[in-house]
Length: 142
Image (tube, rainbow, N blue to C red; front, side, top):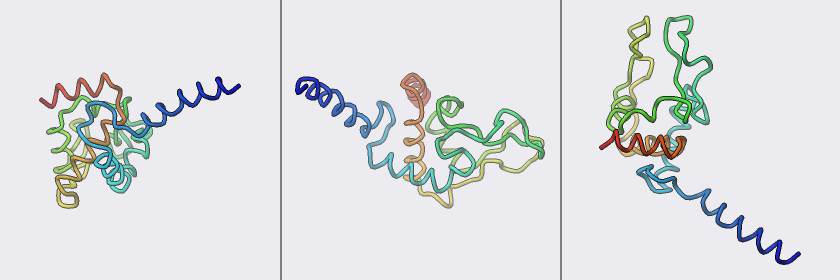
């Protein structure tokens, strides 16, 4: 029984340590990612979901003719954009090109967030992606 318990402890401890470590290719340390998550929860989660899951029916126009907020997790397309592009979208806002309205459906946060906070949010978003998606996005960001 002691051997079984010892073996289980040896398996669990590295798993717990890995849970708090940052994934490869995020571009931020653990504190930066924690800060990014906090900013995301305060400014982004209301539209993009607490877990980055996006709005319901995010692929279909709503009753105003606008595309709802997309997911930022691995099911969305955020990982296809470079860091510079993501920074610009967060700072300056964006109107989805297929919207029937002219308003920015992604509001500009450049006057509310510092450059460091925007970068931290981007680094947090990277934790929501697969390793392959992070690698692709890192290449796009070069």
